[in-house]
Length: 172
Image (cartoon, rainbow, N blue to C red; front, top):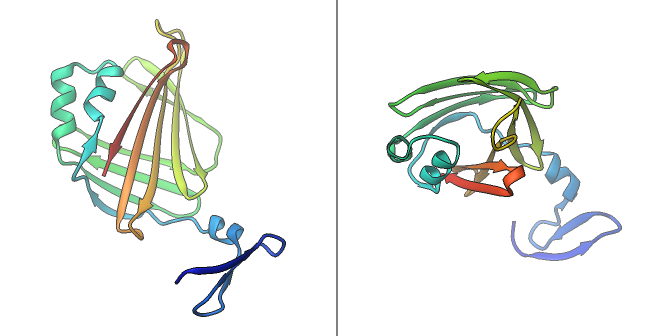
């Protein structure tokens, strides 16, 4: 579409100069992207520091952040499956979008995990359960499409609320 000519908040529509197309902002928000496909990571920001923050030894964290990973994603309106391969490990998980949280075990820790939409981003949230020395850990993975659907961005957020600490990393 070309330049927006006017916006009428009462009608909640945009008027586009070129073709007189009317699109409701709510309708745009309701259109969820499809992340399905094979995605190759070509760049990261902050991954090594985030991994160290979560307790991964620094040498392993640096090695993991430098690996070229492949993300294989499959989903529909209610289901999301991701497979991640990076040469060090392979993860294969699936979730039902919008369902109640499920309990998952990672090493000796348990997490309450849920997946939901936040606008046009798909969010996977894990919150640790049980007594941890530094309190609960929140791990959030936000996936969104950019460049007209040609690039997926994965933003990872790890929080330790009791310590008021947070680290973020980005995968492109």
